[in-house]
Length: 57
Image 1: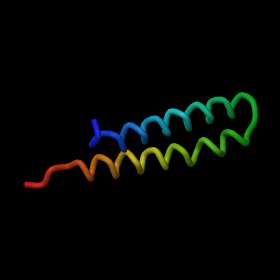
Image 2 (image 1 turned 120 degrees about the horizontal axis):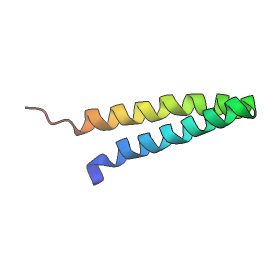
Image 3 (image 1 turned 60 degrees about the vertical axis):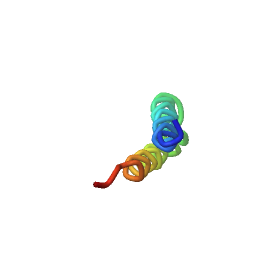
């Protein structure tokens, strides 16, 4: 479980970002622009976590 911690945190951050973006589309624009960068931060964490856990031959 320890080696999958970073990608799981990245997915959680992405879901929070998507939630803020969907909330911001309907209600206010501030949470839309807060959620948008969270998607990229979460994606970067997932990519870094996958690359660091890759086994080299």
